Image (cartoon, rainbow, N blue to C red):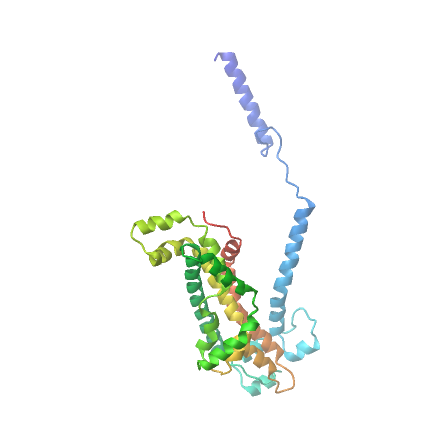
Length: 326
């Protein structure tokens, strides 16, 4: 390269540097970057999402607003967005921190609810169902997806057809069976019908297990691992996300269950929170339910589910979307 070519190259670089300093958003093509404009569909989608978010969150905000009011104010101003004088008296009545006389003085109905006992019962029932159903459903899904045995697909099809049977159809036979076993008004009677497995749980996990290469099982068996070791040491760690998702969904369903615990759990000793709230609503010593305390109890009972879904919500969405195994 001679001197003249070197001078021309230096001049070109200086000019390009000045243009870049003047227009920092200039790309390699020499065009100044412009802000991306979104179409009408983008804003319509965001508008729909915001509307759905408001519809979803509004009941919880309404419960919070109602729980911070007195019954007198709630009946006098039912459309008020926020109470003029927020109070936590409803929560004090729910947690058993007031006497019936104080409850009547505060505008309550004088009804009582053993909130902590019922909360404990709900935790016992939901946790037991979650552990049992997740474990046994995962083992069944492993058998239907990874093990080879005669009639596997036929048995799975028959088992999957149970999804078309409404749960109310099996309530009476299950109740008769639990009664004959002497398990009425026990935690075992409440837990047993859903403790082992459900068709949805098996189908849900089976779809993920089918996505695992079979060579992984064969390699583990060559190393001397049996079916149980392959299941617990290989399959479960690789599908931890869907298993956790199923556990959370099972816990939520067991926590919100109302009909079956109402049928077999009449005793106060095993009564769960959902049934207790219904009974609390029906108690009317003063002619009308204690609506503010009922809203407070319903909001507090929903907090465990809200917290659980907030922590694991992203994992649940990804697993339900059948993202597969990388």
